[in-house]
Structure formats: structure tokens, C-alpha cells
Length: 337
Ligand SMILES: NC(=O)c1ccc[n+]([C@@H]2O[C@H](COP(=O)([O-])OP(=O)(O)OC[C@H]3O[C@@H](n4cnc5c(N)ncnc54)[C@H](O)[C@@H]3O)[C@@H](O)[C@H]2O)c1
Picture 1 (cartoon, rainbow, N blue to C red):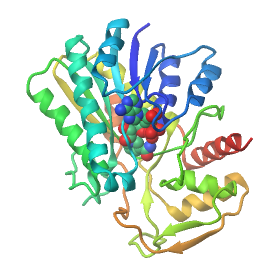
Picture 2 (cartoon, rainbow, N blue to C red):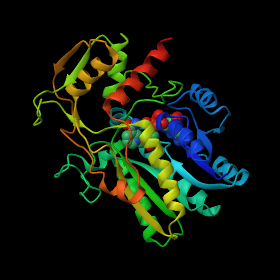
Picture 3 (cartoon, rainbow, N blue to C red):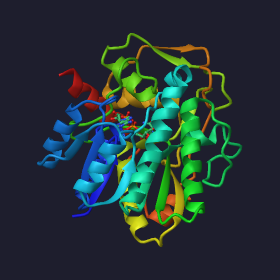
């Protein structure tokens, strides 16, 4: 069985990708420092898979540990999720973000090279497009200056990977630009575990539905969109996980010295009000919400053109907004028990 190292594999997207990898016949190996996740995710994985997933507790910036992991296993490829990801926090502690997100990639690439491991899938984000000039946004749409240190780390990491390949490195790289992941595994044994007050809409909505948050504030209803609220492309985390498996399989078929990147979204945009209404429908809960002022740095509208990921990787999303919100709500309810 081919071993795939998942950095940040105890986190939200990483844990779902571990399931998708096992289902596709791979053996995932996790490294996570649990800075933004819980060991509960490993227990959830064990219950879903009927076996445990090997996990190294430690930091991707620990060069010696990274060497040990590559020496102790026969790793075929890496999916690099580990990063700090809170946009607001990144404006307060930018050095921590640059250090964690950029150094971990550098150390990983060096360790891979030293151990003859070529394939890497990198977690990028639609944040690199900023407010794009064309919609839906294509992979060829120019990137914009980042709005936050977090967004800048994604842009810089993409540049590092492109420069690395330009240098002639014998590596094979896919960068996936995720749109807005939502939902959870249908078993509700793993899901998103936001620490503190969620900055993303859907975990806030489910917490408001559960009564953990008193009121939901819609940040602005005067945008240039049909109902005035911001539009995003919400992608089910199970579909997103599957795109990683497809990427790993795709890399294995490429010649050395290869780079490609893909949007991973549904191709549909939904407004904040549509999310609220859909949540109310699938959960049967009425949300207490009010319209407030716009939030600094929020993009008005963005959704993906998915032609490339469909035609090249053969990936299409299976789930829509309703399934995503239903699974997110079931996960929230399982946390309340
Ligand atoms: N969730 C989103 O909305 C979204 C959107 C676009 C891109 N991304 C990117 O996808 C990746 C995964 O996101 P997620 O939502 O699963 O986040 P997450 O915080 O749930 O998962 C990241 C995991 O990495 C771990 N980690 C962080 N730094 C580490 C380090 N130095 N060493 C070892 N482990 C470390 C954390 O403990 C966590 O378990 C990140 O790179 C993120 O920037 C996420």
C-alpha cells in the first residue's frame, strides 16, 4: 500500500482526506502538532476506518522529526495541509504566520528532496485571487495582492513551489486553490473544530443554531450582489478530500519536474442570506441574525470556474450546499451530545 504523509492530518480537511485516501487504497500517515486540532479526530478516524492511522505528534518545522518520519516509512507523496489559517489572527501575529506557513514548506521540500520523495499536493486558497476582475474565477485569472499575512503566505508558498520547479527540481507539484470548505463526514465522527469564536460563516451558523452563539451578524447587506450579501463557493469537505486523492493519482502519472494548479469549488456562488435560509430549511432551526457593518477585507463575491479540475483531474463535486449544511449541522449536534 502506498504511504502518503499528511501534514496537519488531524485538522479539518486533513482528517477527511485521510478517510478518502484509505478508501482509495492508500495508507495515510499523519504529522500534527495539534495546535489547531484535537486527538478526538484520531479517535473519529479509527471508528470510521476500523483501524488506527499512524500519527506522529510534532511540528513540521522540526527538521529532525521530519527526517525520522521519512526514514521510518516508505512515503510516496505528501499532502501539505499544516498551516496557521486564521485571517484575522494573522494580521496580529504576522511573524508567527510567516514562520509557520513558509518555513514548514521549505523544510518539507528539503526533507523530501533528501529522501527522494517527489510528489506534493499543496493547500492553497482562493484568497490568492482577492476580488477577481472576472467571475467565475479561472486558474489563469491574475492573482491580487494579498489582503492579509495569511493570504500572503499562500501566495508566497505557491511562488516557492513554482520557483522550485523552474529550477529543474525533480519534483511533481499540484497546488489546489480551495474555495470555502463546509460540512463533515456523514458519520459525524470527524468535522471542523473551531477554537474560540468561529471566523467562518458556517461554523458560526451551526453554533448559532445550537444556541452557543446568541446572534449571527451578517457583515454587510449593501454589496453589489442580488441580495446585497457576500457570495462564496461552498464546497463539501468530502468532495474536497476526494480532489486530493485525484491529485496524488494524477502526480504519479507525470514526468519529473512538474507543476500544476487547480481551483476546487462547485462552480456555484451562494450568498450569506442563502446560506442562512438553507440552514434553516435543513435543520428546522430559526436563526437569530441581524445585518451589521461590512467587515474589513471581506471580498464581495467569488466563485470558481471548475472546467480545468473537471477535465484534467476528472473530479466533479458530488454534494451541494444543502448536504454540506446538513452534515455540518449533524456534526454540531454530535458535539453537543
Ligand atoms: N478551511 C478553509 O476554509 C481553508 C480554505 C483554503 C485553504 N485552507 C488551507 O487548508 C489547510 C488545512 O486547513 P484546515 O481547515 O484543515 O485547517 P486546520 O487548522 O483544521 O488543520 C491544520 C492542521 O495543521 C496543524 N498544524 C498547524 N501548524 C503545524 C505545524 N507547524 N506542524 C504540525 N502541524 C501543524 C494543526 O494542528 C491542524 O491540525 C491549511 O493550509 C489552510 O490554510 C483552508
